[in-house]
Amino acid sequence: MPAGARLRTGRRENRSDSLEQDGVIGHHSESVMEIDKKTPLDINHLEKYEECAKLAVSIVIPTRNRPTWLRQALDSVLSQSYPPMEIIVIDDASENSHAYARIEELDSRVRYVRNERPLGPSGARNAGIYLASGELVAFLDDDDEWLPEKLEKQIREFLHDPEVGAVYCRCKWCDLDTGTVYPHTGTHYAQGWILPEQLVEDHTCGAPTYVVRRDLLLSIGCFDTSLSGREDWDLTIRLAEHCKIAFVDEDLVIAGRHTRLGVSKHYGNILDAQERILRKYSSLRKSLGVIVDRRARSKYYAAGGMLHCYMRRPLLGAYFHVLGIINWPLYTSNYSGLLKSFFPLPIRRALSGERSQLFTWR
Image 1 (tube, helix red, strand yellow):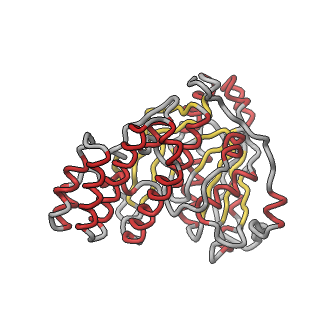
Image 2: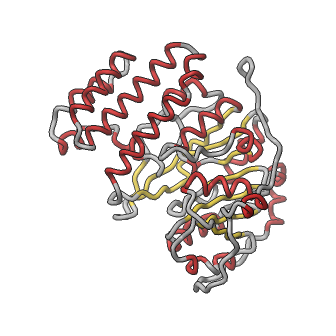
């Protein structure tokens, strides 16, 4: 363990009462939705996992106006070889809450909670964290799915090393408009005490690949609701300050992506979030040395330059790439990005091998 580093934990609290008083969480809907009820899994068979059986897992699934996709996500959770203790569905003020009314009938462990007003993905996940009872919390978006052995393989990592506070895995993408499944590329995965690397760029996958100790989440403040994107990366930076992060090198998540929805707005949200994260951890980066700070700035300008080019701002994109070269001349992507910024948009997109890095978690 690095000097001064330790696994920090906070006092476990149940915030459900205070959330209800604030008008954030409402009561369960009692409208009708036709669903096929699954046979509940017998949690008693956890005994066959020996030591794993003592680690209770709460699943948090935020959703909004997507009951059909939610059902598929729930099916993948209910099919886990290591069954969770509870599944908390946070309806983030859907326009038609009636569609979710009978979702609890799928399984006795499913708990449906509706926010009175939309909190966004981060706020909805935070509400689920506060309500969770398990020692561990796993996240799943309503348009994503897990492979059956995801939880089982990740839970074992916590037993191998007591300093591990979070475990993630690889994922594949599924284009929800075409049904095409393809690998998640462009990420150099890291594990262990990864704070310096994580400050430079995200070396992990998004929230649906993670299982995290709940008390650790509470102690670091959960997800940052002020960010318009990249909240997963921001969370892992704070996790990396306090614990080891383990990695299961298998594709255990199928993450849905909407390629036809709000592309320009999506780019803008990512650009804004990355700028906020750059500013937010400026002091922390500098405390680890000028190299970490300059590499992080160069990566930011590389991503920003690419985003500006996709948003049809090639001159601004070129300017960002020049700043990236000034900050860290060894990062070659700024050179190729600078060259591509002078090409027409279709050619830039065809030539770019790093585009997938910009379309990470919603």
